[in-house]
Image 1 (tube, helix red, strand yellow):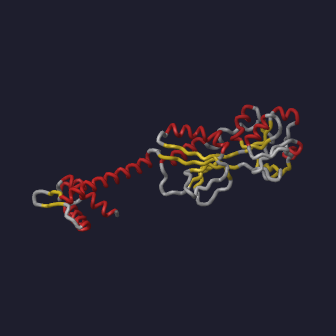
Image 2 (cartoon, helix red, strand yellow; image 1 turned 120 degrees about the vertical axis):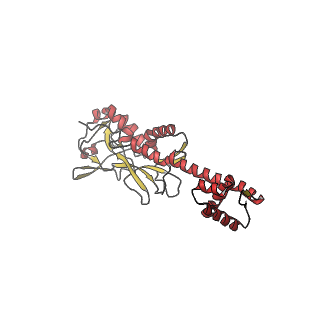
Image 3 (cartoon, rainbow, N blue to C red; image 1 turned 135 degrees about the vertical axis):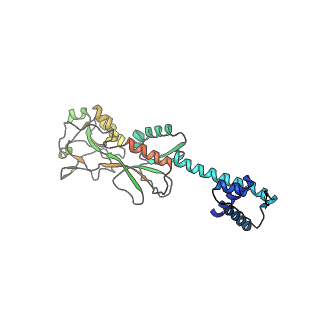
Length: 307
């Protein structure tokens, strides 16, 4: 059904309810002549007479009565559909599909989602935890929360906050093995290697305009930041870890930040990624707003700068 037919049906239903061309015209804010022409156009299009006209009254034909019941139902469904769509733009509802990395989800995103679902009870959240860069192009996700320095074309990327990394060790380890003060001194210590971050066993730093790319010694290589953090907390070596994972331990003193003034080159940023759409639903808009409120620079998990 085209838009013109729906408009003609709307005029017919209004005339049938008012039993008057002039009454329908007044409600529709158009002339009586326009109403008459539109009814005639609808009857010609359908090939039937829907209304009996006289100088004193308007009445439905038998076919008109049958059509009125169906037409009223069609208009009601159209109005309800429009109302539901408008509600989606005003009140968040429906399913919000997210993807995010594992440890960040556990430490920070999970609690945020709990607050979101409490605030918006008509939204169901589906979170896929994955350290792989899930594609948005298939339409499986509304928002991808990612820690990266490499952004794909064809997506909108809202930068949320910085993601800093810190070289750290426990006070117990440093008491036994000494405290390195330059990157070169890391060669004399037991370090932990995260393969996707540490390439060829070398840790990279910048200080001012100078870059340092130093070899480190490791007997344990593992693709889990949490396991590396656990070993560092146990006093078994020096780790290079994101502060969103260890910020609380840096603040409590269970881990000590090292190499003040040297910036790890693996520092990156937290982004919310989504596809460019003409219309943004309320659930996506509200969740993006909550992300932008929760994650700002500097991020709340960052330890204070060493004095």
